[in-house]
Length: 185
Image (cartoon, rainbow, N blue to C red; front, side):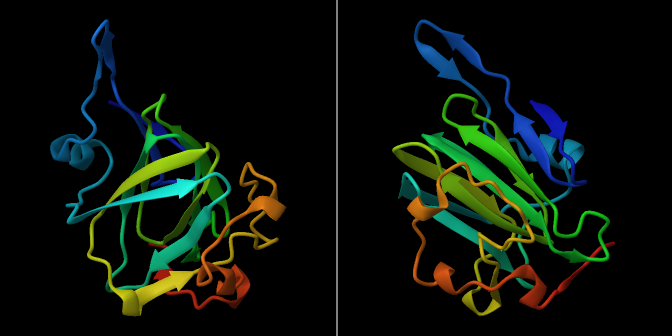
């Protein structure tokens, strides 16, 4: 696997080595030892999967300490624009984001450490999205930021008038109005 650094320290793209032939393809989608050696020491405890249609935007979500989560995300079917926003107080990249297209063709994954809000938009007709978390989901610890926060200047790759959100996500606040619970170390 190839580890590709992004413009924000700690957020990395993981590009697998794919073996293809007339039968199809094979690749190693996860290896705990390689993640710990090349990305960071963490143990994933929960896997999640979602299916969404074109135009769905999920996020920008995070969990507050002590239930904060690092995530390793990938697309099994379709295409998404995956976004990680730095929400660590004092970070030199505070409020900046990384956006990566994850597809069933490129098989890339994105590692998002604690201290980031995460979301994605569906660019294909439908997408199946999987992610690993290094802490269990705790509903009392949920936090969220509006996907269309003008200060973040995120291009979601879809017309915003076609964005589909949950009723819950429609109530997300701007970053400047969000209680900052992560410190940059």
